[in-house]
Every structure is written in structure tokens, then in C-alpha cells.
Image (cartoon, rainbow, N blue to C red; front, top):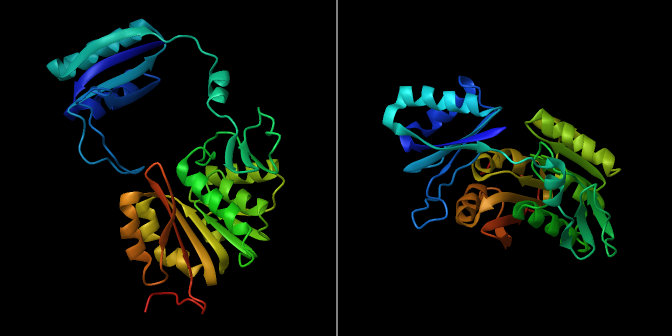
Amino acid sequence: MVELTLLCVAANAEAVSDALIDELGALSASVEDADAGTDSEQALFGEPGMAPAGSWERSVVKALFLDAALARQATVDLQSTWSEAVHLRSIGPVPDQDWVTLTQAQFAPTEITPGFWIVPSWHEPPPDATRVIRLDPGMAFGTGTHPTTRMCLRRLARRSSDAEASWDRVLDYGCGSGILAIGAARFGAASIDAVDIDPLAVEATRTNARINEVTLQAGLPDAAQGRYDLVLANILATPLKLLAPVLCEHLNAGGELLLAGLLDRQAEEIAAVYAPWLRLTVSDSEEGWVLLTGTAPPTRMASSPR
């Protein structure tokens, strides 16, 4: 296997990447900042499914091919179309790797709070582990390594010691791997619903629940029925804004809402969106991400703000 590296102007980078996969036989292609690691590096931020604001002035397109002949022919074809806008940097072999071992080396046990650990299947739990979630990286978000997941799990662990925290029903909205739903079960939740728009995430949640010997109901969003004592949503700012009426309608009077997947600069805006239903505050922060939490009023919440 060989890697083809091209230098492109910003206007052509995505089109070149698409052409490599769709027309020229590349196994994969990616676009990167050509000035990464230099004083000219340009940070771009966006959310999945949405293009980031702006683009890199100079982009590197990298593509994998089965052999060098295919990579060279792809370069010729691209330069015949885009002329001076595409420049060859290199064509070189990709070193053989034990990808399984390499992947496993990147995921070690993760401590959430003292005694509470996320442990991949290829590791033994640490000696001091009293609560363990067994979880391997897969197709759905949530392995315990991202700050947003860790903050939600920390909140579950800390609130479980509060005598006022009683979670007969829990909803994990946007469950991904199911890690938060499983975490709620580890800390005493009696009935748990986990929902996601992605069927693969639903299946991943069911699989991980079986591995951890946890009972929960996983399904698409319409499987969330009624009201809950705790609602968790670790998604992103844009869907969290759209979901405000839905998530708040699912809260019992006095129920707790946990929102994650938010950058510090987005907290104020999200709190304003949810203000008609409840007051949200930043209860944790890590690496520029924040956890917003709030408690529903002690009387039954209306289906829409008044």
C-alpha cells in the first residue's frame, strides 16, 4: 500500500479528495492544513455534518492506493484537470503495522473518579476498581476518553452519593455507545431508556449493555416515552438547541438535566435557549468543554414555555 500526498489550493481540495475516491481508485482520502505545526497554522472549527467556517489557504490531500502505479496515474489525471492547482509532494509506501495492537495501545483503562474506571476488554481492571464499565472503541461515540463523556460520568458518580438523587427512570438521549446509560445503571438507576438517531449506535448500546450485564431499553428517539428523573444528552450545541422542548418535556418535576458536547463559549447561548424551562449552570469543565446541569421546577413542567 502507498500514500499519495498532494498540495492543493483551498478551492480545489475537497473536489480533489472526492475525485480520488470516486473516480481514481483511492482507498481513502483526507484533507489537512498544509501549514500545520507552523506559525501559519489555521484552526478551523465546525460540527459533524456542517462545514467549518472558512478553509485552509493551502491544503494537503493524502490518499491511500494499493500500489504506486495507481497513485502516479491518479496524479497525472488530477493535474490534467486542475493544472497548476495540484502539486505532487510524495508517493511512498505505508509501513506495515499491527493495527490491532496499535489501536489497543491507544486505549488504556480510564479513571473517572476514585474506584470508577472504564476498562477495554484487553485490560484487567485496576486493583482499586470498585465500579467498572467494560467498553471497547467501536462505531459509536463514547469510550470514556473524551472530556464530555468523562464529565457526564463524573456527575453521575458524585450525584449518586447525594441522598436527594433518586433516579427511578433515566433517559440517555443520543446514547452513542451507551456508556452514559451503563454508567447510570452502575450508580443505581432502576429503569433506563437509551435512544439515538443512528441504528448502529442503538445496536452498539445493546451490545455494550449485554457485555456489562446491564438491563436497559435501547431504540430510536421515539422509544423515549414519558418523564424521567434524569435526562442526559451528550451531543453538540446545534442539536441541543433544537431539542430543548423535547428534552425538557421528558423531565419529571424536580428532575435533573445534564447537557454536554458544548464548548465553553457556547454555554451562555445554550443556557438562554433552555431558560424558559429551567436554569442551567456550568457544573464542570475540562479542556475547553463544559457540562451544563439544571433541575426542573418542583411542579409539573409545561409542554411549552409560558
